Every structure is written in C-alpha cells, then in structure tokens.
Image (tube, rainbow, N blue to C red):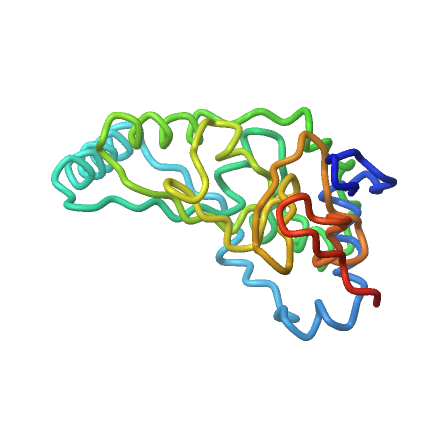
Length: 200
C-alpha cells in the first residue's frame, strides 16, 4: 500500500482458499479438535409458537437491559452467503468429513444480512450499545456500525489496515489480506506517522 492509499499488488482473498490453506497446515490442526461432535451438527427446528415465545423473551431482555452487547460469529453471516465453520454444512465440518468445499465467496459483493441490519437499528435507536464480532467479513461495518465506538473486530477485518507504529486504521474498498498469512497486511509508508513496514 502506498502512502496515497493506492492498491499495490494485493492478491484477491477468498474465505474458502484461506480456510483450505489453514486446514492443510499443521498449525491449524494443533488448534482444532480432531473429532466431530455429530450431536452438535444436528439441525434443530422448533415450532413457530416456541420461536415467538423466545423472541418475546429476548425483546424483553433487550428492552430492560442497562447495557446490551451483541457477540457475533460465523452464523450471522450465513444468510449473506458466507459459510460458517462448524455448523452441519460448515467448512471445517465438510473438510473433516472429506467432502468437497463450496466455491469461494467474493467478500466485496456480499451484503449484510437482516440480523446485521437489525442489530445496527437497535444500536441507532438506543436499545443496544455495542457489537463484538469474531468475523472478518466487514458486514457489521457495511451495515453501518462505527468502529471503534460501536464495534470491535476481534480477528480484524479483511478491509482494514493498521499501521504497526502509530496504530491508525484505514478502511479500504478492497480486500487487504493475502491467503497465506493472516498478519500480512501491507500498508507501505504510513501517511500518518511516516513509518515503513519491517522487512521479514
């Protein structure tokens, strides 16, 4: 990345290719379990009345909460077309069952789900305060949440670069990560503090 924010040779990122790389690495397998919890993989469906009752309870909790913080993971982005990891049809599950993985997802064209938009609306209307997410897809930002006052991305975001010296964050309209290393952002010379990336 140049100081002017120009795009300099960043490879296209896809969720699937990144996951495939990590699945095949010894590092990934040392972090993940080797067994599949088949009980957890069973999709459960509840009667509409039961769901309505649970939604009413949740709404009451949100309405009466002093502070409401949402914690989101891969499941919130499934209806946007991004596969989850450990669900019945998740990437990790399919890999461990030696099934074919789905086609790569173009994160630039993915749009926020109803859930992303509903959470943003709850925050805008003062019913909720904050979102903590482990997703790197940028969909909470696309839904309108402001970083860092309304959102924190625990694993970063594929559209955000951070200077390692002054810590300024720059949001881009392209994916800034390459497939092989999750910490491979290339900011170039920082326009804020002038620092340059360290040579590996």
